[in-house]
Amino acid sequence: MSTHFVNWKEGENGLVLFTPPEFSFAENLRYLSRSANECLYEISGGTIRRAISIRDEKLLLEISGESDQLLSVRIHKPGTHQMKAEIAAYIHDWFDLGTGLTPFYKMAQSDPLLQKPAEQFFGLRVMGIPDLFEALAWGILGQQINLTYAYTLKRRLVEKYGESLENGGSKYWLFPAAETIAGLTIEDLADLKMTVKKCEYLIDTARLIANGELSKDDLLKGDVKAAEKKLTRIRGIGPWTAHYVLMRCLRFPNAFPIDDVGLHNAIKVITGSERKPARKEILKYSARWENWEAYATFYLWRVLY
Image 1: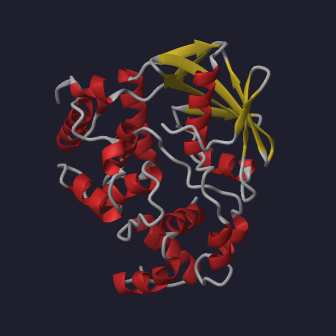
Image 2: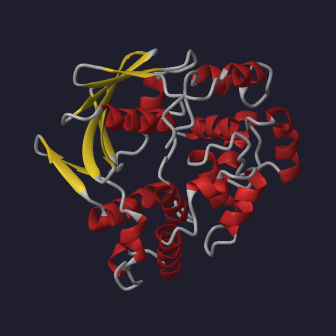
């Protein structure tokens, strides 16, 4: 995890991150609050509480927005400068603070699909999933089911195989490590009520990561096409799941899940059409989004929540 470009400083009980100009903490908080069944963080009173693991140490973070220019992060135990730098890098990645959105908003001003969403959700970031296994697992869990049930499956997986820490009477969960899931059998996952195929895909993917055959660094070596090719070679990872991960974990700006049902529904809603758009229509719309396909998709998804 690179820390050299992250704009932060040590604070009294933790650290402070400086955010880019086109950033709205409230807008990102609204996005993060979209499911009442989220099990990896809790939001109350404008503060996010989340457990993360840094160098095998479990830490509870409290993130609040002092203003849209500052994120204040409280850590529930004393930490070294290096540990704080890694926490800052994690949050920087999670909130995609390294991307300047001025060109995106300029393009969106005259875009028939993006004009309204860009105004309405100004300051929203593509909220990331920094951990590769978590991103792939979420993609696999969400295949061919609705979002509500995907959250239920995630909770079952996390509460059975994830680690947790307790604070003030609350339990904060961490997503299971690839190494943990890699050691399981399909029978172990039976009571999560997932299809056998999903169990196989999850364990296979976990093993590739645990064995070092699949890593973020390796996927980032090439362009979006090369990374997509590596991911779709994995059983159970089709183009949709690959682009979802390329977008939310690997941060390719031109990742584009063109066959996504949510994207089609959002276009239908905005255009007031009776039918979902044909692929050639989507390609026509997206021709203007070059290198902003990931942000365009995320803002169009946001229309549906």
